Length: 402
Image (tube, one colour):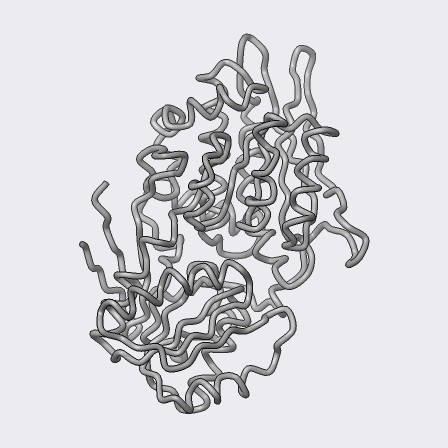
């Protein structure tokens, strides 16, 4: 598919949430996973319930990210149930979302996924982080359940796992346009300050060769543990001592925004490359404006989407949850609707292989009003979205097509 790059700087509403906030469900640290308190839908005579699993961070530093991903799944399920459910093989089904908190830990995600399948008979489990996906891929084919993976890590689809679906675009399509934009605008000296997670390391490994291929050099190689570090001035000072033109950052939106602000407060006038975990629309709520992240390039805020179902989704999300939806919520919302269409086409709610085989057809069967962002189908077990990038450029929206 021809890629289209959209560069935008939209001022959007968001919430000021400390330390990425905390989830609405989840266990205490050290107690392992806990089952989320989901409300089982009411069913009439002849109707049945199908459980859909979710394991993600619902407590700890990444709780708000986890809540964003599961909110889209819940919202789609609620709408489907309120519309009377969906019919497969003459039976009407309603969706019950069963959540477990894994605190962003791969081993907990794997344990939770197994519990969801064994105790709740879930044919599909949503997992919103690459570590959890890799850990669950060890046994999901043998135990016959599908992983709905919300991670842009491209390696999850290189494992030969036929029951893994990648929901967001892979991040390996972003480094080249990021690098071209930043080197042309700011220069070739790069400081690395991404999150210290495995995801941050993988993103960095993908970015650095591209940066160097286009004539750049890495002048500072660091990382930030957002679960522990709250004073960003020392590490930012060390990075700025090497006189970078551009800083690569990323992690949860709120602390990433504060890290970028610290760089500005210390006199940095260059650009920022922001990995896709951090969202401009959430940074706006933290900083109050985009002045401190001028020159940043990252992901398009979903509130700027021109897809036919975007306006309705955004309005409903804001009314129900009191905050602006991010891509995590929008993409999992759309994925849940595609999953239901695939079940209908496969004529089963229980056979993950049959359901997986119909996911591409499920995209094509989806009604226009459920397209929150532009999705053309499923290619090599990954959703094929129109790629988009947002940049903060003099506070104006700039469109670039490639």
